[in-house]
Amino acid sequence: MLATGAAGGYGTYSNIKGAYDSGTALGAVAAGEGATAVLALVMLGLTMLGQASPAVVRVGLWALPAAASVMSAVAAPDGPRTVIYAITPLGMSVSAEGMAFLARRIVVHTDGRDAEAEAKAAAVVQALAYHRARAANHPDKKIRKRSDRASWRLARKIGTADTTLGARLLEVQRERITTGADVALGDMFAITLTPATESVTAGRDAVTATVTPALPPVAEPGVGERAVTGGRDGEDTQVNDPLTGLDEESVTPAVTPVTLDEVAAIAGVSTPLIGEPLSDEQIVVVLRFLRYSDDPPLSYRQTVAAFRESGFTGGESRIRGAWATLMAQEESPR
Image 1 (cartoon, helix red, strand yellow):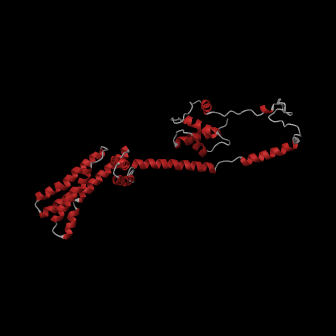
Image 2 (image 1 turned 90 degrees about the horizontal axis):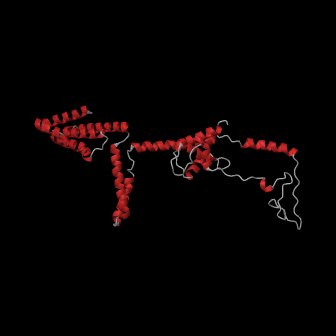
């Protein structure tokens, strides 16, 4: 890059020297390529410091060599050499832009931030906020309309050339694809025990049918007789089951549902709270509580949906890790 810039400066000097004296040629090179080299060093230093270059520096990198090109073209003796003389000073602009671009990529690679992209993004967001405010509150209808159109044009520029945003979006997309693949493979290779359970139940019923005789049907109440309901007779007297001798109302005990506090106490962690950051152990507790809140237990997709709907917070990767821990605990021998 330095050799290209030096060659461009020497070419401009020799071209102008052929039409004017050496002093004029030296001044033209100093005003064109020399000033361009100074601006290139300024932009290179700012880039290495992680700062955005002012607009006047970027404009000068092309305006000064363009002026030198016009000067060289005027000094050309004929038409074919006019083009050559005009292109020669642009070598300095290409060298300066190349050095600045390479330095910018080095800074982005080492520090992870692009000062130029951040400056452009800040300018776009600031202009967008201004036009949205003016489109909503300006008293002139025409100005509101122009600002509304300008805000839509600015909206297309948000995130352009932002490498950090692109990397984050790709990471989010990778997590979603990984979650989708995990759920799809889990549904595909899940082992269903329903057929085996039905066959065992059918065999058990076939065996017990020959051992236990069927009970006679209950006779319908006659005229003037009252049906016995609720385990009591017509005079509201407690009636026991004639087969077992137990109270009909006490045969089926009441089932108390397990609360999240109880599951957390068993796991030895504090109770997870909605809207607060959760530890990995607390996420496992919440997934266990939600999974067994229904019969049959919920699948991964249903459990995650219930987790989100309940208001708990947690990243996709942490939820997948907690689900893997829960599955490992369920499959481990007890």
